[in-house]
Image 1 (spheres, rainbow over the protein chains, first blue to last red):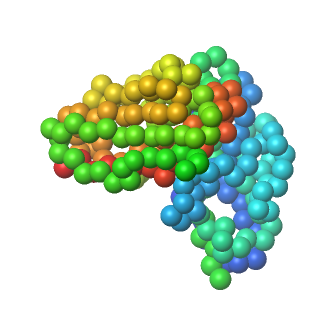
Image 2: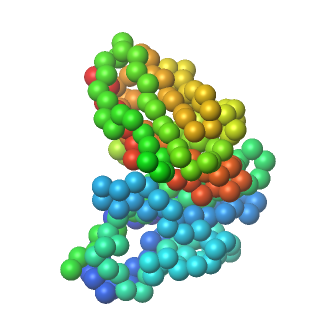
Amino acid sequence: AQRVTQPEKLLSVFKGAPVELKCNYSYSGSPELFWYVQYSRQRLQLLLRHISRESIKGFTADLNKGETSFHLKKPFAQEEDSAMYYCAPMNYGGSQGNLIFGKGTKLSVKP
Amino acid sequence: ETGVTQTPRHLVMGMTNKKSLKCEQHLGHNAMYWYKQSAKKPLELMFVYSLEERVENNSVPSRFSPECPNSSHLFLHLHTLQPEDSALYLCASSQDRAKNIQYFGAGTRLSVL
């Protein structure tokens, strides 16, 4: 069965510290992977997608097919990064062209 | 208003009531989605519409009935709900199913008494 795992429910770091939000997936074929973010009192929105290979708000995510991971990283966390982060793979194959969301990790950046 | 708009923002209903959730998108998208977000579960996909045709029903009970009269509007009709149906219901849209960057509404917080 297709599955996505975000092992940390809550991640708390101090401002300026590096942060890594973990995501592991179990998918057949070649999924496309996304990170969505929900800031307090805002709607869920796309943060980045792996095919874009871009850095958004200082965040990057590298797809590691060997480890089936797509961890989200930022070298220096800021207080405004505090939010819920959801990893979401999508498999284009067959009838499974749907996003499957992880349970999310709440990132808290303390001053 | 641009983006994805959901109404109402909050809804309280009894188990015998019939109500509807509305979603409207002004992005010119062809695919629309209903998700359920419960307190202790991941975001669950309920229904997918592409070009006004339902293409996915993710084993949702029949007490939830979606309707997509045109590509800009999506409804979720509710009847004889159970307390465990209380959740945040999110609507999303995307250009089409293949280009799956989804844009979300703010959600409707539903409480079933």
